[in-house]
Image (cartoon, rainbow, N blue to C red; front, side, top):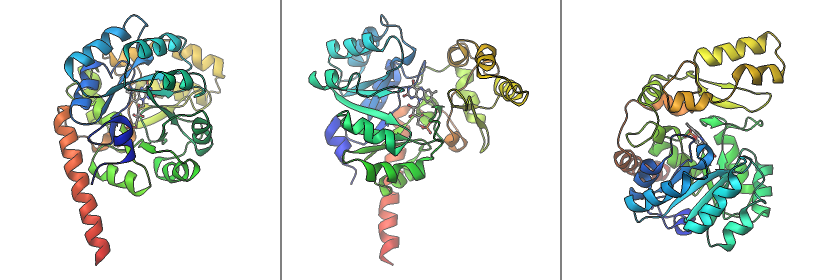
Length: 317
Ligand SMILES: Cc1cc2nc3c(=O)[nH]c(=O)nc-3n(C[C@H](O)[C@H](O)[C@H](O)COP(=O)(O)O)c2cc1C
């Protein structure tokens, strides 16, 4: 019931991928997701080139299942990360934030499966033309960087499914089996989940970051940087201050200077949950406790299977 083309493509038991998350998606989390039957991704976006090889080795020590690496293309370190992935022979690479043409040929020549994260059907077409194996369609409710397009997962996924003829992975707003059923109903063949796995035992996030995610209610996340780089995170002192500056008419340059560098690591690594950026998706309102990844995946799969059967039965009546 759960085997999709994404499972075949990536060698998975379940079409469940944990998003590459800066500072948070390290070896322990990636290995736990892969070990549970999904695809764990390392988040290379926050890693220096000398850190990634060790993280890859550590995943290989922890699991013999397939895993991958997320590489934001626009990151100046991306080329070295790509070389590392090829040298180490990782199973899959997800590329985001940049042109999919840049690294797809080299990665595919090395036998690595490539999927690219997009926020719109138009960019999905571009990624498909660049030769990627699958598309992750990420809606505006997702944690972390969002598209300027502001298209939500519900509207985005079926449009991307219609726009390309390669498998589509739905991302944004999925944290349990119901979300998986919805994604499959929209035509997706897999899901990429960030927020739920960030709030897991194996996530490398600072304990205060995880606790903060659990306090998020329905309107607990906001988007900052709509003019220069939209980012969904927990509403806190920092996001209120940014919005105040925007309301005062600050220019993009002034806003960037006001925010400065290192806000994500201040929250994720140092636990400064008021002065740092706590990347987090809207679906955090559904998450009530921190759990081990294995339990999260088992619950999701059981709920999705029951949901699919339930839908079928309801449709028969
Ligand atoms: C803390 C955090 C950090 C993230 N960092 C990245 C990243 O470095 N690269 C990337 O492509 N996506 C990143 N994302 C997005 C996730 O990979 C994933 O697509 C998204 O979280 C899915 O939506 P959800 O948060 O509703 O589950 C991040 C998300 C979170 C919550």
